[in-house]
Image 1 (spheres, helix red, strand yellow):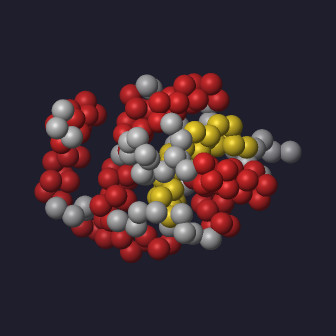
Image 2: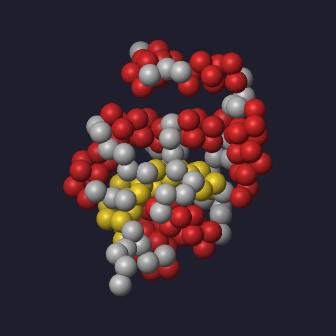
Length: 171
């Protein structure tokens, strides 16, 4: 018997967390070890449960998913992260890919596709929603929109990006 993939879910909508948990455990054969909608609980839950993969919403009520990802990395955790979002924006996907996510999935995907993609991401594959493949190819071919700025931002250290995020938010 193979060990179940341990997954953590981060989404500020309780219904989405519950539905995805049921889907992954009952139809995907995975084990959801933690769920939360509170970004402040993410790092402590990772420490406690050591998930093999995190499924993270891009838009949370208190913050955004990429800020949560930066918190996780700053605390020294390298858990692979798959974004599951409603946003089909090329800019959002580009930012997520630059932040080092293992996948970018859309909430309107077929449930079986989501299960399959999350399983593949847990095995180390990069996964992208089929509806986003054209945008993904565009990013790979030409770089993000405004690529001169994208190239500049890509050269920043993690700390420089944190400072830039604070400046951009008026802090």
